[in-house]
Image 1: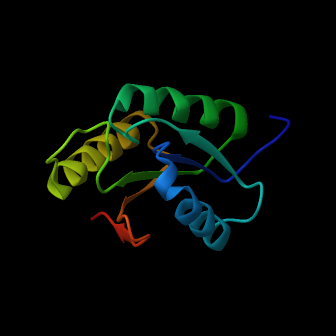
Image 2 (image 1 turned 90 degrees about the vertical axis):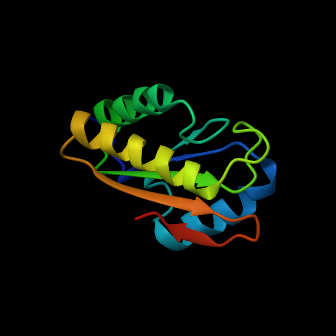
Length: 120
C-alpha cells in the first residue's frame, strides 16, 4: 500500500452542516489523515456506505470509520425522529463491524446548531 490514512468519515452532503463538519474534522483529525465519503442521507443507504468503507480499507489501510447522520435530513423526509437515525447508525455500525472486524467504528448525530452527539 503506497499511501495510508487513519479513517473514513461518512456524512451527508447537506450544505447547512459542512462548516460544522469541517471544524469538527479539523479538531479531531490531523490534516490529510482521512478519506471523506459525502453522500445524501449519510448512512441512509448502508450498502453505499459499505462500498466506500471497503474501498478506503483496501486502498488506504484505514483503522477507523466515522459515521455521521444529522437532524432534519431531507433524504429521510419530514417527521423522521432522532431514534430512526440512531437505529440506522446502529445497523450500519453492526454491518461494518461484522464485515470489517479490524476497524473501529464511531457514530454521531449532528444537530442543526452544530452539536455532535455520540451515538451509543
